Length: 91
Image: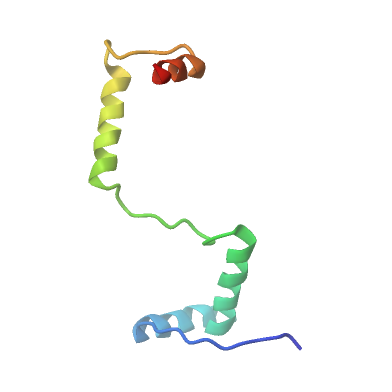
């Protein structure tokens, strides 16, 4: 017999009911679904799906706009290779 343990999880009761129905349609209970999630997390070394914010923050948006501006600016400094750019950073 496998070495098992119990743990408690607090969650919204409506979410629990919806998940029980969903996983029931897939032929498993919520305990099995949670075990699938945890085992898959171990296999991939993290969340088994992408976790991210829906939109970038203001600093990221500003950096993206600056990068777009620099990419088309005719007076922007250009480098022929990475080594050249790194040499300039050391100056």
